[in-house]
Image (cartoon, rainbow, N blue to C red; front, side, top):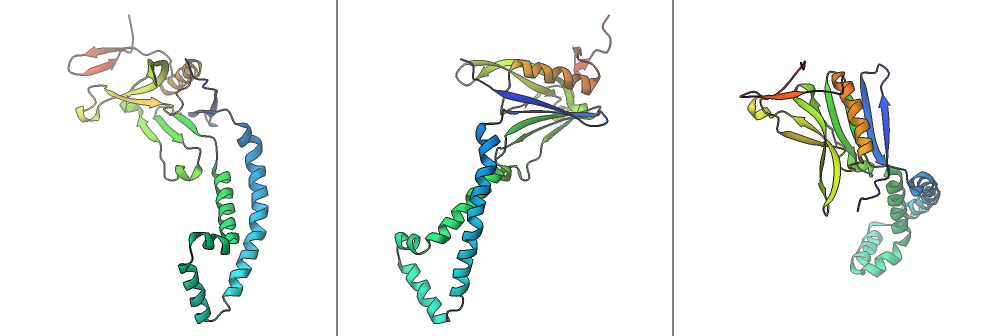
Length: 231
């Protein structure tokens, strides 16, 4: 049985029409659209005064002598976990609140993106639903000189589910570009339905090559070569 795959496709073209981004993501959930930010604001309104109170209590403790601070530290180390929670409940609650705000603000819609640059190549990238996991994550750029074609294939996924997926066929660098045996899946985390793939496939090939139709033949010793004119 096919999964729901309730995805949305966003197409963004730059001002000079030289590149286009195809972004596939889940349709925004009710929580992300209406609950996340209000809940983060409510939690933040509690965290700020709580942080002020906790800071005051620790600043007051700073006026103790070294021997008194040492005695408190020894008592803390000798106490069990239950006593630690009991005597530091306000601090633990504050840290939990800060963590909750950080998680709510870092939550976003996960997405897969295909960026097509005219006469240059394509870039495949993915974003996690947590912003902090996207730090330092770079996309996979494939120059047009290494691209054989962008195609839609049919394959098995999961427990025998037949799906369509789009991929870019690339030349083998180790063989001097003579054979096309590299495959990079586009939209690997979402694997959207055929209607979305067809729309992206037509637009991306038009942007990359200026046409949606390309033809190849196998040349012995040279691998796949594009046929410019068919007679």
